[in-house]
Length: 108
Image (tube, rainbow, N blue to C red; front, side, top):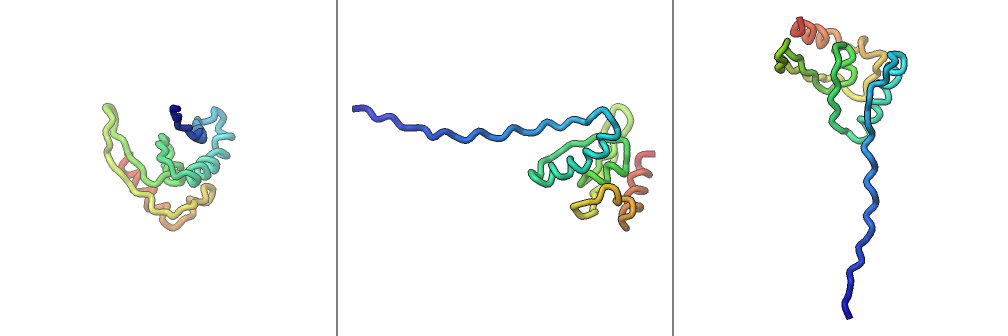
């Protein structure tokens, strides 16, 4: 009599959330908090492209400054402001101004 091994049904892996930028700027401001919450749950790598230096500081762990075309990495800056971050109050953080100026000087 042949024996057949029973295979345990593996639980389905949860689907990875698809993150898209909402088209309305009002909704996007509210979604920054959601993006930070999502990151804190899974600590996933998220590539976020922005022209707003304050936004890059508020959301990122590091920023990369790209050169003009053909784009190459012109600089890298570690964001040393501890998490969790207050997006609305990020500009009042003691380290914000110096970090902002350092990145801005490289962009110009």
